[in-house]
Length: 148
Image (cartoon, rainbow, N blue to C red; front, side, top):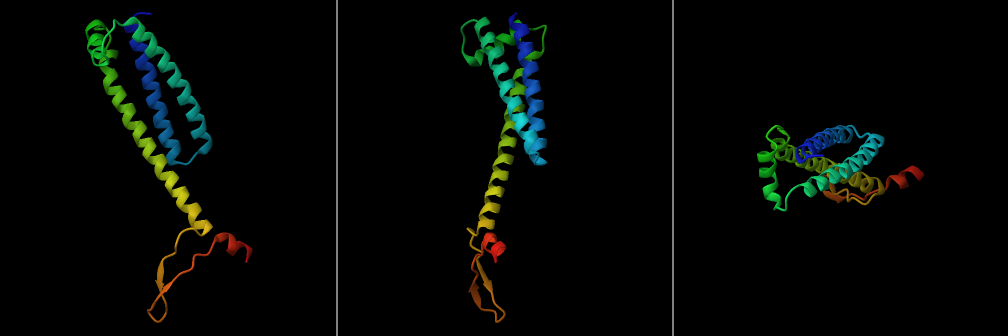
């Protein structure tokens, strides 16, 4: 396979990976656990394929710094616009991955809060009684309420 063909293949793989990240975002938003697991497996497979293509591409390129590779591809693969799309595509993937990571972190914090609330680990805080005086609320575990 030529350098340009490998570059085209890599771009196709990156585009498929970006679509997978979009599917992951939709699955996270709708809390579809089974689909999230399937997508995680697909991502691992795609990452392996992309890594193999990247290694094959590096083996075909002359020895150079990573910052020079893009310029080399643009110069030597003029019949393909794939080389020009690599940087834009990788930036889009990075942004989508960060977005998905932030959503996942938010969901994890929400779940942790819910579990702490249900287990009575969260201080209910101070409240005001009927006479207007501050009184400290005693957290009650939902487990205690269920067995009462």
